[in-house]
Length: 621
Image (cartoon, rainbow, N blue to C red; front, side, top):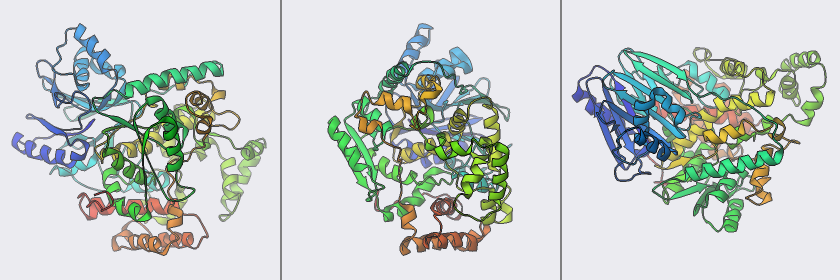
């Protein structure tokens, strides 16, 4: 695991050396164990290392035999030993035992097809000094990030956007079109970013860059092939492949721990991984604390359990740091407890296993169900439901309005993923005119739905979440919050072989009798107590709604909302009004408020304070 950065420009090698060092220093948190550089007349490449495998000789950049190819790599390749033996048999000479080296020799042997052979999480680039050509790729699920900046004068790539700011030819400019869409989703959607000319490489894609031209292609595609297995067969397949994946994800030359909540996903991993240490955070509230349940499971399994409670003061104090490490505004409240969790774990281990991806692969979200009340109403003719939708849209906010609108809409109209913060009209009502031109949510979802138009609605929802919510919310915060604390996070559910099994689960066993993740829960019940296998999903619940009703935190948020520069983006009276409505208890606006607040904190860090790292508060210093 590491971080990397690089660029192609027309500056001298001496200038390149100075710039790439500055860029590398910006992401020292991703790799405090070492650094390495490569520069020539065309390119500069920088690397920061967190030593996990081959601790003594795995430094980068690494080269092929004649040093014509050089690689920057971030991630882990779990089948590297098998690939190494295969390549040695074909005559390749290895200089070390690091997983990085199999990629560069594999590229020599197989060309771009090497990406199809890799089992792991990765983002990498390979520079061909003879062809003056850059090849890069991102893993199938987007576990590792990959950004690039593309203008005629400068091409940059890296694990984090903040490195780009250190290049003198980088023009830092806010992408005005990004804000409106963010207010709907709570995260920055692909492939553009909040910085003009900065883009994200989508998961399962690779590229070649040569002579100023970027050519991108998709190498991995999700295809649901639900078969006719009986339940016992499906359960056995899940358990078999998950145990194999967990063993692969434990490969390390340093100690491995695990994140643990009270839910089935992390409990399953902890029970099957046989690690010695588990880590949990929570809030001191009956509705927001999973630490006791997690501790009970650790006692059953005989594991050491570390736990920590987060206060409102800690939450608000760390927010600038969280937004700094996120690179773009990110309004998933759970990113903050995840930061504290990673910080706690990093004091004892370098690697943790975690349960991200189980809900997307096995059907774990409540939104994937069709509630009984919808099922009954949906029996009415669609024309009638469509008429009632039109009536409801003209009504003020009232009980039942949202139900009528959703039930009278097609899936493509009503489902945008797990986070739906506000609709187009609500966003426009808060934004100044210059910021109302962003993509409508239908513009984001339409091309994705088109790829799976012939599948059932459940699979359409899962497919959309695999392309938006998973890589650009769940996995983004997982990578950024752990790497901010020099901790490697591994996700055994997001394994290519696990996915092959998950996409073949019979449709009726994904959700059965309103039980989500039905087949997986049955599999989990063979290795963890039934109480944990049946647990409903909680996630990192944060009592933000309650905090905003307290004068202290109401005033803190209001202070941010009323800073002079905020009126550039928002109708200040409008955003203060929804804050007041929330405090008075008339509406639960906490998600809208936090999405706005997170953006303002992010903007202050990157534009008012010029992207400098905030001072860490005492709670984690």
